[in-house]
Image (cartoon, rainbow, N blue to C red; front, top):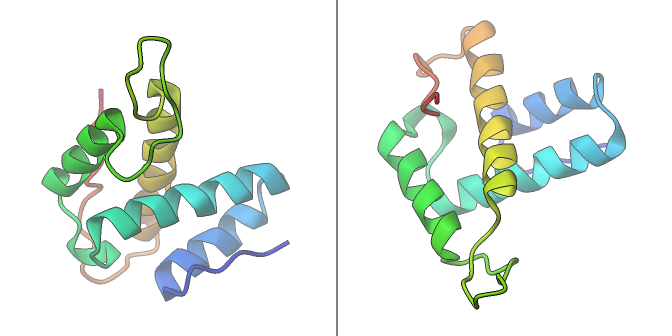
Length: 112
């Protein structure tokens, strides 16, 4: 099973994940990366911490992704889904840093 998102860095990472993970993990990772990069609208080398923070806020508020509606009528995705999406993005940046990708000098996903 393979997934491609149309960006060489993202596609390289998905090939890396596919060699190590189950199909559902690969599918979730591809979806998470697509969701993130569609939101930020930037290539990986220019994503900043503020882009990640804006993504987190939008996910909690349900801006553009109303996949969860709480019992109280609130919208947005669950905290667990946000953590998984951030883990996928952070994994991508760890991969890019490990291979010395030009323009990628830090992981923009905040820790903690």
